[in-house]
Image (cartoon, rainbow, N blue to C red):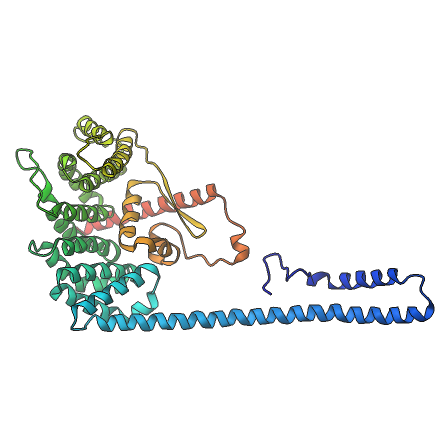
Amino acid sequence: MPRSKTGKRGSGKPGSLRQEVLQLQLSTKASLKGAKNGVKGEAAASDDELTSDVLSHYSSASESTSVVEEGTGSEQVDEQTAQEETEDKLKLCIDNLTDKSAKIRLAALESLRQAFSSRVLYDFLTERRLTISDCLERSLRKGSGEEKAASATVFALLCIQLGGGDEAEEGFKMLRPPLTATLSDSSASIAARQSCARTLGMCCYVSSAEDGEDLIKSLALLESVFMSSYPNGEGVLPTPKPGSAGLHTAALQAWSLLVTICPTSRLTVLLSHHLPKLQACLQSSDVNYRIAVGETIALLVELGREIDEEFEVEDGESLCECLKSLATDGNKHRAKNDRRKQRSIFREVLHYIENEDFTEEKIRFGVENVYIDSWVRRRIYDAFKEILESGVRDHLQFNQLLRDIFGLGPPLILDAAVKGNKISRFEKHLFNSAAFKARTKQRNKVRDKRADVM
């Protein structure tokens, strides 16, 4: 029987074995007190037999514990077997990426997407990254719109799995041309272009954040996509084409993710150019694009205030009036859920613009928490969540890349005793806040270095 954290085994206490034997002996002697001398000899013999029985009982308990410990070893073997079976299935999926049947290739891509998002597979993928990248490049160049979209998503997951090191950067250099070609191709499917926009932003953020040239090129390409939603010279918003709002949303969100790692000199230019145009886009007819624009405005204002405490939005009164209108929008021609979601987001944006106050959010995973306490931090978390989906918590727990980004340190290895000694909520909050401040300082130093390069 397995030990509990208090050191107990079943209902007995091995540390008090002798005391229990003595107590049993005394109890037996007391019950036989006043017996004849001949019977006393039998009682003494009975005491010896009882002692032997108790010792035998604990010996059996010890043996049962050994069996359990052996069972733990067998569980490890079972786990290893399961891991080998999973890897065999993944190898088959990788082989199927080159199959002649588009249906089989799509099924393989979907299986890889689910596997990459739900668990950390660094060692397995490091050995096969070039093969997988080569297959994904082929799909991005020659596949259908659906296959291109799936390939781009799997590549974003591959970069997250590889952790942003040289391996991820090597893959990004290989797949960046087909990603940008698909994103720039107006004849390509909207779904494929959206997926390529998200992947371009994520992979650039993860693998080449230190490369000023790749960063500027990616920003410029994403800008060229969503800027087609900007008002014309007369201040009139263009009529959106079918599906274009979703593409503009994906490009804007990917762009705003990369803005969080821009050097200060470049950031100043982006603020002055984009903030006025984005304010006009708050009148867009698509609710998701309006929300993305509102969040991006809040993000840019936050970054502006980091650079200069005196930073003010141009025509701030007009912006606040527009935000108030969206935060209380009750137009019946819009879906009820859309109105509710819009009001909630724009109340937060308005509250931050007016009071510089952000509504903190706590993300719990395992025995740890991540505190989302800024618009920058929310954009980063949302970007990973959009790609990893429900697997984001597993990656926060075990993926070193995400743990570095959110200041969580090395992955925790917890046993039952450690789990019983949880730190307080306030201590966790202080730790996360300190880690985020340290990361912000480091990011500012890196920005200054990249400014010299650019």
